[in-house]
Structures are given as C-alpha cells and as structure tokens.
Length: 392
Image 1 (cartoon, rainbow, N blue to C red):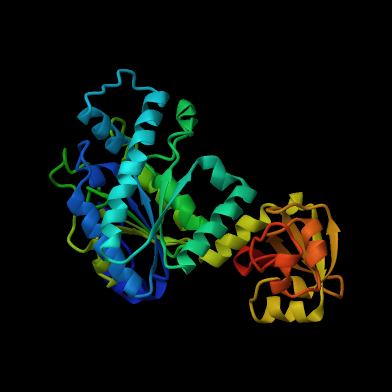
Image 2: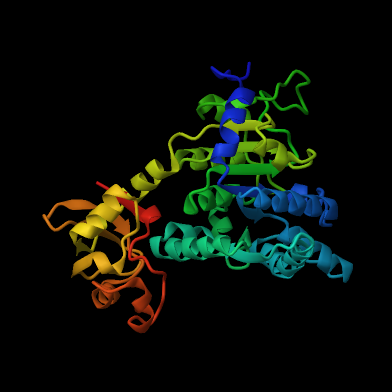
C-alpha cells in the first residue's frame, strides 16, 4: 500500500501552493521534450512557454532546467546523413555540441511569442560544488531573474566527463535539485511522461497506485523507485527520487508529475493535487544556514562591523554593506566563508564573501555606490548578501 499522509494532499497543496510559489525550478526530461524520439516536440515546448509566461504574470519567478540537447543533436546529424558509430562520452559530447543551439533556438522562438527573453546557462557538477563558482552562478541567475529573464539551464555535456565514473547528474534531475538549492527555490517540479511515483511498476502491475504524498523518503520509497534507467534518458524514477531527497533537504517542496497533462504548471500553482508531492524537510533559510556553517571551520578571516550594521543584520535582516565595516582581518578570497563580528567582539554570524579581503579593505566605511571607482571587478553592492548569511 502507498504511504498515507495525515492530511489529504489536496488540502495541503491548496493551502500552501500560492504562498510558496515565489521562485520555482521546472525540470523537463528528455522523453518529454523529444517525444521519446530524436525530434523536439514543438507542442510541448510551446505549451511550456505559454504556462511559464502566465506564471510570470502572476509574479512567480521561473528557472527552467531542460534536457534534449543530445536528442536534438542526433536529429540534426541524422538529417544530414551523418552517423556516429561509437556511443561513448565523446559521442554524447558531440551530439550535445550540435544540439544545444538547436534546442535553445526552439525555446527562444516559443518564449518570444510571449514577450519573454531567455538566457542559456550550461553547468557541470563541479560548478555547484565549488563555493566560488556557486557564488558566481547564483549572482548571475539572481540578476537574470531580477531583469525578468527566464534562465534555461542544462548540464554542460560538452565538457562534463563525470559519466566515466558514473557520476552524471541523471538526466538533469539532480542538477535541477542543486539549482533549486542555489537560488533558494520554494518548489522544484520534475516533469516527465510518468504521472508520478507509483506503488509498483504500472507497466507490470495493473494494481499499482499513484502515491500522491510522500512525507519522508526512506528505504521503502527508494525500493519503489527502483534502479536508474539507461538508454536514451539517463534518468528514471530513481534519479527523480534522489533529486527530491536533495531538494527537500534544502527546503524546497518537490512534485513529480506528467508534463503532458493539460496546464500542469497552472494547475499545480492553483493548488490542485497532481502527481506525487514530497514535502520540504526544513525552510530554505534554515537549510541555507546549515550549508554555510559547514564551511566555518575553514574560514580564512572576517570583518568587524559597527553598531549600525549590527542592527541592519540582526534586526532588519539586511545584507552586509561596505559602509558598516570598520576593519578587515585575514586573507580571504571571494567565495570564502568569513566571520562577522560586532563592536563588542561578539561574532554575529558567518557568510559567503562577495569580495576578497583586499577589495573589502578598500571599500570599508564607504557607500556601496562608490565601489565602482574603487575595485576593478563589480560583484554587486553587498559584501555578504543576506541570502548567504548565517547569523549565530
């Protein structure tokens, strides 16, 4: 029997959906965008763009993680009579290189119909595991969203070689979970061709039931998900459940659903029970704090701040600006974890530095708008952004 929840999924979703949908990561799988073939599904892409445009009108920020570049590349080469015989890492990278522009061209055409600009971001696992590269990616995605641009993200198959060690993201499932953490998303939607997580394989067991709600991912859920799939798609239900495990731990609600359901995004936003829902294990802010604190032991310095900065940080939840910094200690670099100490010598918290110690020393005590004339590279007005700050 499928796991039961204490409250009905519809009641829970209807009560929380609109409140939580501030920023959403939507992942679309290979079989969804290519129709389980080598041809991009124009209807699916167009319908996706339409729903994203409607959600943007409702004030929801959307990031799209997409598969399909390899399938598009295979189609493009096949149309020219080019056949690649070996199916190794280089084979996949060639197809991705050919298909990326084709895939993005289709997305651009559909989103332009709704007046939306898009931006491409190709990421690899190391990009999100390095604090410095993570910070660069986060800042870029934040600025794109602030400009109303829809980021379209894919794994950088052209340069990624982790597949040799069986460490691929998994058809972008795990990549989407890590992106959700990077941008503090409230919701991660994993859209494919399956309705959600079933109690058994519905292709083999006619009595299999759709599990509407998963309160906790345990061995039973892992067993139901089964092994990862090979072939055209590197994902499968196992990688989706693993993505749900990652994203819920970092504070996002996750839904696995069929992208072929009519208006699936809009129905989910309205609070309708669609697919399988996984509840967040904590709030995004709590998980962010835990993630930052994992780097405290390797902190390479810090800053001393005045009483005004203490009030701004502790009482008002603001970012740390140069004007409130009175002294800089250590030799930290951009992306390092630094301590923030008040005038009484008490550590207020820790955060990820937007600038290195040398630049912070030049900017300290000055207005944020003066930084452009002081430092060579501009990484924004904050020395530590409030989303990258963990108060003690």
